Image (cartoon, rainbow over all chains, first blue to last red):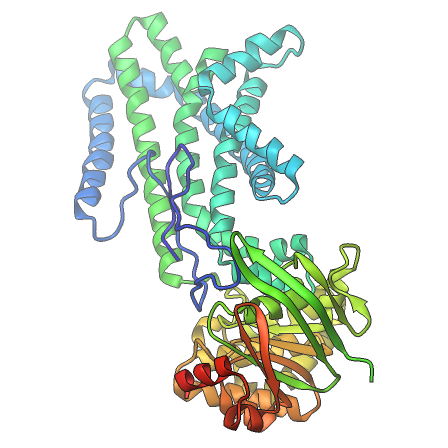
Length: 288
Length: 243
């Protein structure tokens, strides 16, 4: 099985699919993992350069943040006391959006591989349209443009827009993950009299989860960063709180430095978690 | 006697390649048929069209009176009665051996889990793997995996078993353990279609050997006669290659 990698344009690079019964298949189906390339650099064992770069960035950011608060309590301590409200909103919006995006992504991903032409076309058009429009434009569209007919609160519009947007990327992850499972698995299940749906639930998806967990972790990190866009919809997230502090105190440099450092610490922390998870999944080989 | 499996005028092509060019075949109940032929001769395609893993372009296939090739046929019901064993085993790697065997009986046939487990343990004993019930596929050798795959197919209590090159992916020392299981199965009266080049198995268990080439059946004969005294020129040439 060719290792499967995927970039954010979503085109899976995979060996050509042969038709007919003489496909080459590996004897023990071990799904490869999918890597999504344009998010935070995921440190991996053996990549010392990346590891130390991670150390420098992560601990460097922590030290700078602590140093600023200790050495210059005014205004850094005030800023640090002011922004955490926004942190909760940032996390709330991110977790809500990623949850809905997972549901949308699973449905659309199944649609993308459906043999039903109508369902397949609907899912594919959804993915194509959404991935072709910038998230910021989608946010404006749902909040302001559709606001003419449907009045949504800022957070609701933000979560809706980000769910729909990330659902399209999740769909590609689910699709690539499902397609990375050797064809013989579905055939064996069908030969036992299982329906496609039952085989998907009991045989294919349980194996897919292991393959798609790391890329989903990456999407979570990307979404955490992209959630800063919602500050434009009057959602009081981390960036918005920083901006509010800056505009009342005129401490622009200081405010945005703290905001940037907090984002950096968070994304580096989560990218490390994803790396550890990926490592464990790979070492265990199977999910039992 | 009414044939148990009846294939008429089976045709199938992939792009420009004609995999099956009008195949007729009848198999009676309890018969063991070995299909041999060079790669690309259509033997796997023929086998896989019997439980509709491949759809024929034209032709009909009946199993025990049920029409497999009818689009309206309840193919799931038919597949329950047709066990299949693959070259690459295709065990479910996330499930233990016993879960592999009981999954379909429990979810498809709605058999009580305890009863399904009892059946599974009996089948594991039959294929000589009683001690591996809780193991996972990646902890087993190829020969053991294939024997679990046979037990998994048998757990659905099929009326016919299809074997698609069951020993081609195995190291020589593991081939025998799988063939022994298959030979026992044949002796118990299971109807079997086997795509394989294992002549030892053919002599020990097969009633008939079929030689396929370029999507057609070239020759059919009892094993002894087939291997010692083939009639067709193409069969002779092929046997020279594999003997």
